[in-house]
Image (cartoon, rainbow, N blue to C red; front, side, top):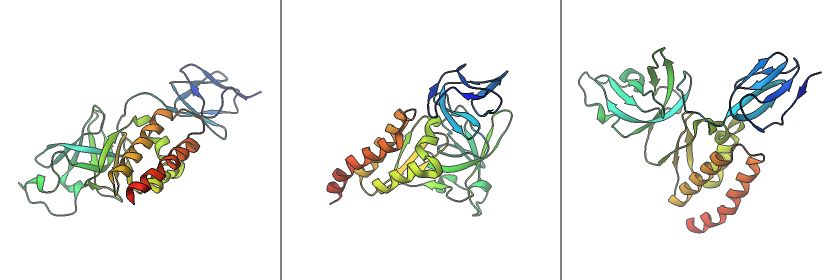
Length: 236
């Protein structure tokens, strides 16, 4: 008889038995040994129907094709820019992938994107040697102007975003801030007042700290409600 041995959103350690029986299917962060599904790493259990997977609570970001990330320009190249990815592997943004505008050979590329500028880009290729190619062509991809940038554990990004963007949308509504979350753990925030930006920062950091706890959405909503009045007084 098949049986789940853990609760949804429970924190588990490597080797812990999550389920017994063949009715359940292992997914990301889990594996099967005989008729048991075991945790492969430290993580937060997610049970979706018959599928059991883990949201990692530790580890570093590894670039992969399809990820949308935020990073700083760290070097100007002959034919583009080198961009930090919050990992050991920087990315290359070629001129043709940065803009549809014609850039003449030998042009001063800092006129378009300078060292220190942050960009929101998409990874479209990662080679076997971990060379990362990125593009700025696509919906929402662009150079980011103003605002502030913070770094969070990349493994906590799904909790910061929430199901179908519910968590980050709630933060935006309460703080009236623009918020972009890169899958590499870099977050860009721009608000109408510094106090609103700081509330967004504090809220995101709270999610990062408490991502493994049950009832996170309710606690974050209460936190925002608690601080909303003070922010409104400042705005007035």
